[in-house]
Image (cartoon, rainbow, N blue to C red):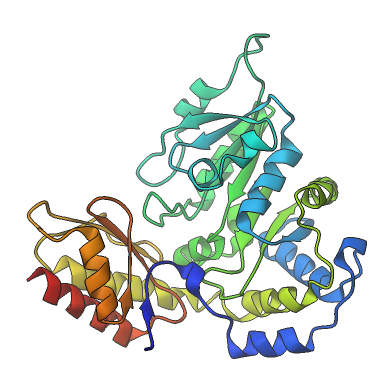
Length: 344
């Protein structure tokens, strides 16, 4: 069966062009800095985000953790969103492995962190309290519905942080979705920030990997952290080659995923018992089912699977559907009709 898989954009497979590039990639030992394909990917990634250097890592979680461990010392504090991926879905790595304390701030509906809340969260110079070192922002923001941060907000946030001696790291797992949705280059969003991690293996379709970017001095220190975390890879050019194709061929087409997400949301909005969490800004559709629906989310998942459609419940009555390269217009139509058959 050819599945319609809307559980996440992490389920994407490499394109034929990626597979060909992987097979032909020149390689070397990346721990020695000698893999030419990895080096090219890192340079291309840094150029895309307007920073000096990049570091290829196996996952976005490792990229975020390496950034926090590089910026922060043990016992220091990072301000993070209460619904952020770093806080909720990265296994507590910053505290478990880095001894970094988290200070949690509730996000605004658009995924931003209000400056007045950040001001209140910054620790005073008091021996009893940890030292505030970093602010982490997420864009696009998963739990807030795939929403993005504007260039203007990110500039204000960075100026605010730098004036107080803090650094700003962006969890930009879906950074290019945020850029395409706003019609700007990624570097327009990231230029004022101190570091950013973005994923190659979600909407960009590469099979593995993320890139952490920042200043040359920062990346030199992060490279040591990557080694400590077990992320030093050898002939990694076979993976980096797919990432190069992703950055060269897959960014602009993310707009197609956004259009299909809106079509999916519009189709679902026409059904009774469905309550959208707003119209999608990027490639994520969040919705709740009315309490009058008697089917459980587990039953709905199972019945959709019987129809060849894989979906993921995000709560007792909530679903998140994610569009990507392998979801076409027919997939959207079939999904809406399947929900219609279940709910009517």
